[in-house]
Image 1 (cartoon, rainbow, N blue to C red):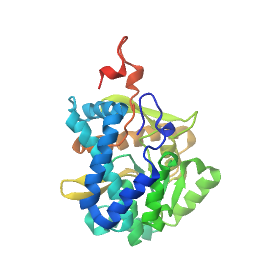
Image 2: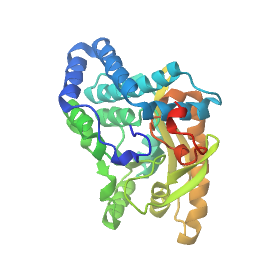
Image 3: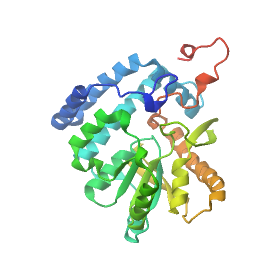
Length: 316
């Protein structure tokens, strides 16, 4: 979670590896009944000590709900993040099974895989997409390759590796993407595998390209890379999310682009079109399940636009 005026990628992971290992032990030997009370205590500590994350949470919730968020709701938002991490561990440990998740799009993805037609899946820091990857990796039904940035969550990643040796299978660091990597990704698509990219957060590094579009009522920046890569590979593109609904765990798949090569001069227009549909799906989920979008930093750069004389502390 990033603090005030800090880019998320520069924020070091909080919490020692030893403490996280204790949580892992509690889950392995005591299950949810033991781990959830411990998680509540840990999350409450960070909730009290991280004013910036409370402030960012409140601003996001105000946009998603259309009204100011109470401190209680902000707390529940933080707690939902902790529970999502526990579910991620649980999925890799086999405590959560594929049959525990309602996934209408699973049959369609299985058909694409059988036809050797892979696709690009654009996800977000919403719900628990990693849990979905763990489930299909464990049962061997789908091959999902994830391209992401994990440098500031290494301690937690060590726990995931302890939970399952398969956790790092088909995991590609975003900094490793190059022309050679793009060729490798195309080969995976041609074998019927899938590529997952998170498209709601700018990647680390200077000089990154972005796309601007309205999101929850205000202009936000989205990384251009996932959209350009999808068009460059010529693969079908889908929006994908895994989350906790009223009836239990759920995953959904929504089409964004049918596939096919697009000329370089036309890519910007196509990217904006795909982005618009991507945002429509993400906004719907954020309004239906507002506590499950996890970007605890100054996402809309609100603090660059504060009125004269006002400080971030005036907000929350």
